[in-house]
Image (cartoon, rainbow, N blue to C red; front, side, top):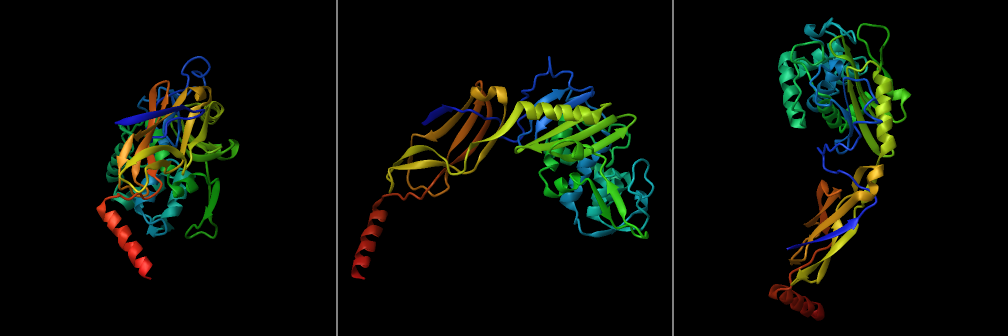
Amino acid sequence: MKKLIAALLICCSSFAVGMTMAFAETNGGTENITNAKSAILIDADTNMVLYEKNADAKLPMASTTKIMTAILAIENLDLDSIVTVDERAYAVEGSSMYLGIGEKISVKNLLYGLMLTSGNDAAVELSILMAGSPEKFAELMNAKAVEIGAVNTNFVNPNGLPAKNHYTTAHDLALIASYAMQNETFREIVSTESIKIPWEGKTWDRLLKNKNKILWQYEGGNGIKTGYTDAAGRCLVSSAKRDGMQLICVVLNCPDMFNDSMDILDYGFENYKRLKVVSNGDVLGEVKVNEGTSNVFKATAGYDIMVTIKKSDEEKVQKNILIPDEIDAPLTYGQKVGSIEITLDGTMLSKSDVLYTGTDIYKTDYIYYLKNILSSYFNGVN
């Protein structure tokens, strides 16, 4: 039997990855926040939806496709390796980093060309390196999308050039971006405003400039990727971090993509905040121990719990600590003994198995007593 210890908190929110409960208003003051055909704002630490507009509409996404190309390359290739550019990556239509056939270049510099100048040629070269062809690479992209939870997405190529059945949703693209932003190398690349890299055969370096104005026009801006084709319109996946809260915004087919994205990000920062609810080491309850060297043990938080909550909902949240009434010895330090539920207006936001024993507790059976007697005897002899 378990007992429930409930206490009202001042702040809290979803902690579990994958939570997609939307608290943003979708009418009144926020429905006209953007002219995008589709848009979404999520908290990157929880994937909680803070704002959305037609977020599940399947649409082309232009070069925001390259977010998936980049994270797959980072995860599967040696970034320091020097590769020889395949002829299939030469003179690919659209935006380019101007690779030459047979040029020697590092994988990491290909990634800078991919994400800063939106090189379609870099995307093709990376796809060949990983899968042998862009077509085979698209299969890897789709498998990864499913793994991430982006189940309404289908990739046909690695760069986002117009193609039948190449589509995503704002929600899926936000999930892909959230996943990618967990990677330190990815974050480093997409937050770079400009960089010079070697250009084989030239007497000068390539100067790669990021097309994403969010990086220098928005406080806390740290990513991610622009995109444009006639079919997709102007697309932008942007991100910013303030006061420990990392937000990701996606707008698809948005005429004023930078200003609209900044307005949506403003909405998030103005209405939500991220706070520490539980600190590592906090004692959150006591449990009776049967036949132990101690009669009780203290249930201790094993890590910090950071939460995101709408500011106006702060007084509505509960923290429920679930621990047993009693437990039999022995217990080992760090053993899981309970969990914490976070609820808002009775709705479960998250559940974390975070409670642990803070010390070893031995069973007081005859073996324990015999050991004590022998220990006392031999210590006395000495």
